[in-house]
Length: 289
Image 1 (tube, rainbow, N blue to C red):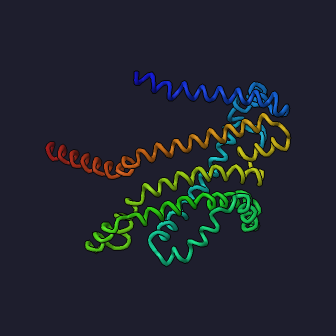
Image 2: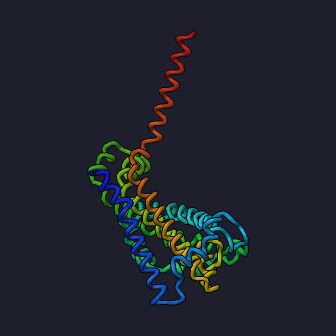
Image 3: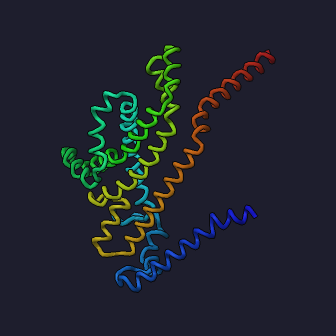
């Protein structure tokens, strides 16, 4: 009985939802807008990009998987930059009242600024790099827009560390560096990871806007090109791919978050296993000799 209910929950209900959405889409294409392609028409006009996902016919005429890979590579670079900047800022914001009072108002003002506003500034900042201006501007935009959840969640996590933990660090006379890595980081990690997850979602949203405005090859660039060409089926394809990739990225981060204790413990377990294996090897050698 439990397996049947689980099957209904995981497969049957999502299929019903998808069928209803397709029905609404078909209804809208026949009534609300005649220019909106029906599901069948969208499939006919877009299947080349799906059936040949790795094809390369030109910079802005590639398989949908190639476009997605180009976007994900840029997202990975900008997201990494966002974490490298946002995590230390979050620790300083949470640990230092002076730093918080000085910079928190500035962060709160900059945080809601749209990526559509940051991208032109990035193009101006990196205009001296003639060959990589658009890529650097996109990385700048992704980093600036995606780092705020990491900054704010890390700061909240640092402020939530129990005072008893810090008192123990003082009693043991731990250095600031040891206090950071032995107490603050482990206690703050759940908050940090929530910020990481939110930052990844924002980074994926920003890359679409960045590619649309700069004309870079990728899902966003392809979407903008097809909009200018009035090929609406390809626009729908891009929207579905953007949503699917965003969903998969969120599920991946959720899976990592659920197994975070095991992932953190993995290096120490590996070290203990190697030490045990070396000790067993020495025992065998001593026995033979």
